[in-house]
Amino acid sequence: MSTELRTLYPEIEPYDSGMLDVGDGHTIYWERVGTPGAKPAVFLHGGPGGGCNESHRRVFDPAKYDAVLFDQRGCGRSTPHANLDANTTWHLVEDIERLREKFGIDQWLVFGGSWGSTLALAYAQTHPECVSEMVLRGIYTLTQAELDWYYQFGVSEMHPEKWQHFIAPIPEAERDNMMLAYHKRLTGSDDAEKLACAKAWSQWEGGTSTLLPNPDMVEDFGGDQFALAFARIENHFFINAGWLEPNQLQRDVHKLHGIPAVIVHGRFDMPCPLKNAWNLANAWPDAELHIIEAAGHAMSEPGILDQLIRATDRFAG
Image (cartoon, rainbow, N blue to C red; front, top):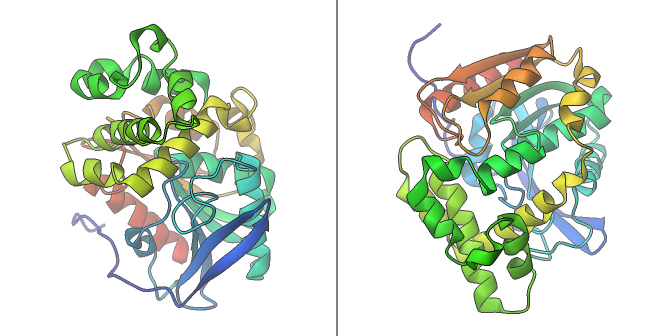
């Protein structure tokens, strides 16, 4: 095996794109990238509320894949922007199925990182017959322990200066439940407070997602449009524990048996503790876990990206 780190495929434009009315007042943006009729794949972005970007198209060999990317409800180019109505994990699972059926795909590779890994697991456990392989990064199983670690006590000890910025918009008396305090403001009627809180919420994640500081990522996460959708949708999902039963995704891992998978996880992933990827891989005989030593959470971490590209190349056949 080459020791040179793999990087993204060259920039590419979609060969087709459009909007799909999924009901409940939501319309989602979708695009297809690569070679029509080649190996089907679907890319599930993070957040929830993060939307797709140009780099997400480039984890697939365009000569060997026909990849579907889409912006989940309320974010990216989907409409209405930052909307929380009829926006749950199970609505998104059915949106994935609508896309699969729309394009006449029998089975596809499912690629998801961070929240995208959560959604990928929920989808694959609901529709295992539709999944050929899985490539997952930064496993997040949306348990209370994971939420507490990131939004209450844990990462706060590793990044105290960023934590100070995160708690600043919240009065001291409400800081014993940061998710709830943010929820009140992100769904409130004060637009200025809503935007300030959205930026603080989003930049907490942007600032703790890479091993080494990445000011560009922090700035991107602080953009008004991005931050509003990201913070509102993410908080909405997390305060409802993703509409999952406690430990559901780990509990139901047996439903994935027979589906080959590659799991890539950074040793120093702050948002998503490595233990959950370890537990998932140990319960899933078909999954191969790659722990990347000098890496945090982001797909852009060189060691993480290298293993993701190797995985999509391998599954392309």
